Image: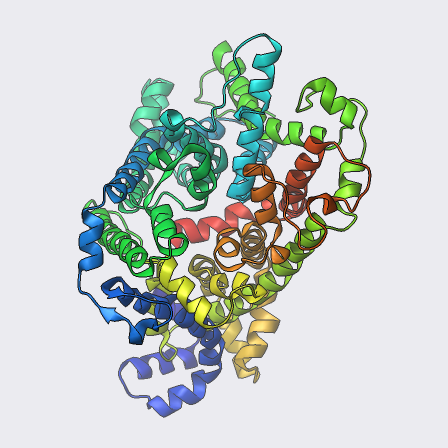
Length: 324
Length: 300
C-alpha cells in the first residue's frame, strides 16, 4: 500500500508496529473492530450467495435428486461430464459461443476505439458532452428493452418490414433468421454498449501528451502519421489489455440477450453455453447435468482468464488482479 | 468555439462535413428507435392503423394508452413492484457497499488483505446458475421479492470503485478526526461521505439501473406471474408477443374493461414506461460518469 505516506504520524507508527508484529492482535482488534463490523454484512452476503453456491457445484458429480438433496444423492463420478462430451447439442452450444465471441472481436471490439477517436477530434466541449450523453445511454437499458426495440425496428411487424410492404416489396424479419443471428446479436451489442466501451479509450486519449503532437507537426508529420505514430501507440496498452481480457472471457457472451431470442431463432444458432445450462438444468430438470455444463464453463473460463491475465503481465501491462 | 492548437492544419472540407455527419448518424441510430416508440405510444388507434403499424410522423396524440396501463392491472402492479424493488434494493446495496468500501479502505487495518481478497475473488468465477438456484430455493426465497434483491445485492466492481475513491481522501483529515475522538462510523458519516457525493451518486445509479433492469433473477426465482417485475412483463408481452397472463380476470384486465385500447400503442407504452425512469435519473448523474467510472475502469 503506497498510501502509508498519507497516514498521520500516530497511525503510521501503528502501521509499522502492526507490520513488524509489535502490535498485539488484541490491540488491533480493539482498534479495528468497527471496520470489521462494517465489512461483515458484505462478507456474509458473498458467502451465502457466491461462495456457498460455488461449493454446491459438487452436484455435477452426482445423480442429483432435488428430493434427496446433496447429502442424499449418489455420487457418480464424471458420468455427467462424459454424457455431456458425447452430446452434439453441447458442442453446438460451444461452437455458437465461440463463433459469437470471434465475430464480436472483429465487428464490435474496434467500434469503441473508432468512436473515441472521432469524438476526441471534436473541438467543441459542449458538442462532445451531448454526443457522449447520447451514446452512453443505451448501456443503461435492459436487454429486454434492447431486444424489444430491435424487434420494433427490424422484426416481422417492425418499421422496416412495414416500410418494405408499403412500397410493394417482400417484408423481411431479421429477428428470426438463424443464418444472420450472429450479426444481429453483434449489432445489438454495438448499439447497447459501444458508446460505453468508449469511456476507457477517451480516458487513455486524454493522457497522451500534446507536446508529442506539436513536435511531430513541427517535423512535418501529417495528421495520419500522427495518428499512426502517436495516438495509436498511446492507446496500445489499453487495447491490448481489453483484447486479452475479452479472449479470457471467450465462453461468456451474456445470458439475457440469448435466452430472450432463443425461441424466436431456434437453438441451432441461439444456444450458447449459458442458455444450455439453463435449459438442461432448470427447464429439463436435470440438475446434475446442468451443473456439470455450468462447471465446465466456469472452470475453462477461469483458466482462460488466468492465462489471459498472465499474458497481460507478460506483455508488460498491469493486468487486472494485481490491482491492490 | 474552435480552440484549434496552433500546429494543427486547417480542417479540410471533408473533416468539416464528415465529422458532423458521422456524429449525427450515430446519435440518430440511438435516438430514432426511442423516438418511434414514444410517438407510437402516444398515438390514437386511428393514427396507428393509418400508419400501418409504428408511427413516425406524429398526428392525433393522446395519453389513452398510459391512462389504461396505469389504471390498475398487470402493468401497474409490475411497475409498482419494480419501483419498490429498485428503491429498497438500491438503498440496501448502496448502504452495505459504502460500509464495506470504507471498512476496506483503511491501510493496515486488521484482516484488511484477506477480506479484500474475498471480494476480489468473486471477479474470477461465478457460482453457476444451477447451484445458485438450489441455494435460493433451499433458503425458501423462491417467489419471494427478497430473491430479487439479496443474491445480486453486492457488486464487487461497485465496491472496488468506491473503495478506490475513499482511499484517495487524505489520511490527515481522517487522523485529525480520530484525534478529536470520532469513531469510525462518525468519520464515515461526517467526513468521508460528504466528500464522496459524486461516487455515491454514480454507484447508486449503477445499482438502481441493475435492479430496474433485473430480468435474470426474476426469470429464475419468480414463478408466480402476479409478482413479476416490469422487465418480465416486457419480455412476455413485447418480445414473446404473448397475451399478458393475469391472476384474476384473464387477459382483458390489462385495462380493467375500459374501451379496447390501440394494441400497438399499449405495447409501446409499456416499452416507454420501462425507459422513463432511466431517462429521468440519467441527466443528473451523467456528469459524474467520467470521474466515477474511470477510477474503477482504469485504476481499479
